[in-house]
Image 1 (spheres, one colour):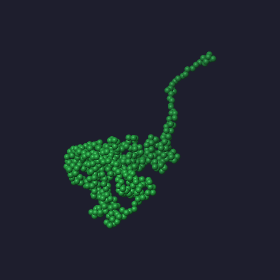
Image 2: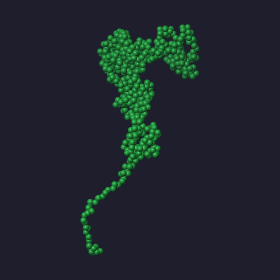
Image 3: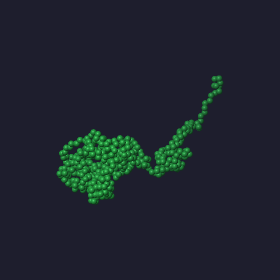
Image 4: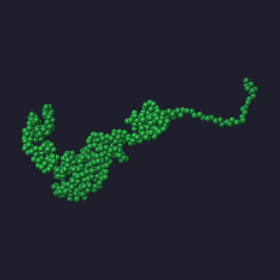
Length: 507
């Protein structure tokens, strides 16, 4: 290994490139390069004769492995800690090397309980019948000497072996996977009947004995497209061996030894590589050139028309606390957005920003996209209704109280004593003072000032009391009615008289 490191270094490779090429830790490469041949040989001899920290536990480990040869090194380490509380502190790799040495010395192989699986070569699929898709990742050396991890999406047409690859520097999400599908269909100039996938979390949430539960985005997308999705069983990558081979092919033939500059340049380079090598050279399995076979297969593919904004707006339920849950994080919404169990907003992701729209497609708020989990991404402006500025609100309420002379003193004191609740008080005055006469508002303001009760609710209730009391007093006053005689004062009328002797006879 020391000679290999020296050889690659002499060819101009830096430490990071040598580390990737030989699968060595970068610190190990640096240490090897700092030694000449004699120093390295001396160091090796010292290492080989270094005293073993675990030599006192040799018998215990051998006995344990004789009885239980299937145990892993980590299990042996746990048993050592359980039986020997005074076990010296060593790295798990030290325990692993110690266990492996005893296995080799006493010929104690680790028992493999897994039986060999029998395979059968399947016949070639029909043109346009099937494609296979998968994901991969790779650590590339960058121009500044550091390492950059890239992620890629691969799709292959099963019959022609025509391949498509798309790179990005962040892990794939449901939305970016859908965009990669669109790019692949444009590249293939059509869609196959079926696409075979692993049970990947960006596409499928769960499998319930064959009842697939897809992610919301992919379910919506696949329902609008022609292809049928087919998912392999768990832990069964062999079911889509064609695309598994392509993932390895991309890593070994295209990525290895290449320096990362930027995402756009990488995708341009892979398209050129596909043209000259990936799809341009004869395939060892079918002994045909994939590009030429694709010229036949594209006639059997379903038409693909570019989908504009297929998943641009996704519906999400609003929680009672005026948040939505997206990818295990909570994003806040303006206060009063929640209006019952069926309240829905629409979500859009673009340029690492999360946009939330109301049902009428008006923008409610914007958040920076969070790639962690369990976080609450909060906008402090959402805690109150701030549809109006404070100064505008003050002006509007002041116009309503223009005929109330004592109002300026009241609002000044209210601003001092209830600064945190000033907006709430102003909104109450604006909504409740319209139907109250200014004279009663003035009486209520004077009462609140004299009582040092600077509260809009108290002011409104007091004004309503004065107004109601005034109405009661008016209703209890008896109106004076002028009674006019229908007889004229100028009529000549003489009353009848009786004779005195008539009363005397009665007596």
